[in-house]
Length: 117
Image (tube, rainbow, N blue to C red):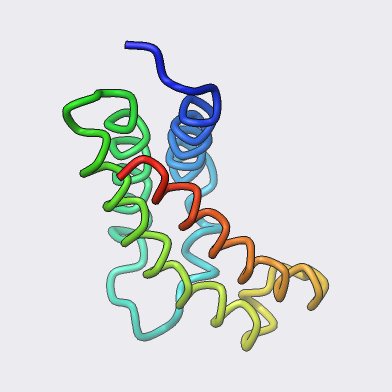
C-alpha cells in the first residue's frame, strides 16, 4: 500500500520517539508529573505504545485505530507539557518560550494524526 509521504513521516517519528524511551528512560522519568504512578513502567508503556501506533499507522486496516490512539496519547501528554512548565527540574533547562511553544505544536500533531482517522 502506498501512503502519502507525511503519513510515513509521522509513523517514523513515533517509532523513533518510542525507541528513544528505551535509549534515555531517565529523561522521560524526570519529566513525568508526580501524580502519575510507576514512572519507569509508564516510560516503557508509552515507548511501546508510540512504536506500536507508529507501525499500525502503516497498516491500512489499522490506520484509523492508530490515529485515534496517537490522538489520545497526545492529549494525555499535555499533562507532561504542563508539568515541564511548572517544575524547574522537569523543564530540562529548556527556555520557557520553548516549553510554551510545545503546547500549540501538540495541537498541530493532533490535527496531523486526525488526517488518518
